[in-house]
Image (cartoon, rainbow, N blue to C red; front, top):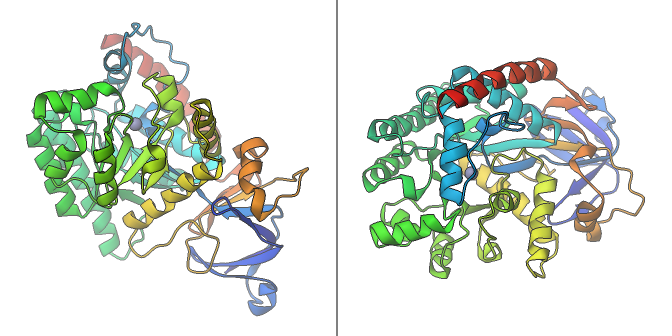
Length: 440
Ligand SMILES: [Zn+2]
């Protein structure tokens, strides 16, 4: 057992700050929070990290395959719209990924997340020239660094129907492998969803195969929807249906479904998504970067969550950008609305990790924690947490990160070999650039 003594427990949403207290952790779980726990558990390992302890942060939509895409030294053709941007940039990148680059990307993405107090990442992976086994290669990064992940492969028809079938197979294989680990008495930190790229690159036959993979594995679909208007228009033009009606008709909207973006969903689709209790991942920075518009309906969803869509894993920065974008668009919601979205990621995790509870520093919850080295010049109190995050706190203040009761970063030092991960990333990136040039 481990006891964190004299820490202040910080919850970002609903905002709360405790007086100094103790947190007792047994194995992967918090067993008690209260004062004087050291005398109650005299044999426990006592630690005094100081500062604040919060639940670990959750990134609910990410693409670690793009972890090496920063500073790309490849001449990318200019694009006139989002569809062309996908073709000129992102689909050139994903086709160039091979096993070594996927492994290096997973490691780099996970290492970055760990340093930022992020304990779980919901990832959406694509590598069309390396599909079989790609989720194992990606998972290696999560496992080496020690963060949790809900992984899936972005099934798509855009490289032919054999590619689509291989995508479905990889999703199913990985989910069943996770189940086998659990059945054998293991407690996997990496979980599985069933992935698809976006409705405009997935035909009805593939949707059917995805639905059958969801029901055979008990997982939900993770898919981009209406990131650009093109996707919504295409659905009505080719299938005579709104995107969410099409997904629902295929049996793909449910409480484990994760929809990315949704900028151009209609009010009746918002209602349908809410009725089905599905999640919608808001990625404000990515939407701004791609100039696709703004999801001004995000406040109307029952289960909005926050993702970065591949722009790192800094979740406090993501929440802040979402808030500023909202204000810039003339909105009147306060920062706490975005911290609530961040917190909702924990409910998503609970639907993928049977029997586990996430997102509170309380007895019975997983010991997934972020430690904050914050000495505020203004009182930090339960009523002003959102204001501190909006105008003072940042992920640079994370001193330690713990997942399932185990430190993965301690006193700003990673427990994993961050230097080796970065060096490997740099050498694999050189190959990535070359492979992208060869595929132009
Ligand atoms: Zn995405």
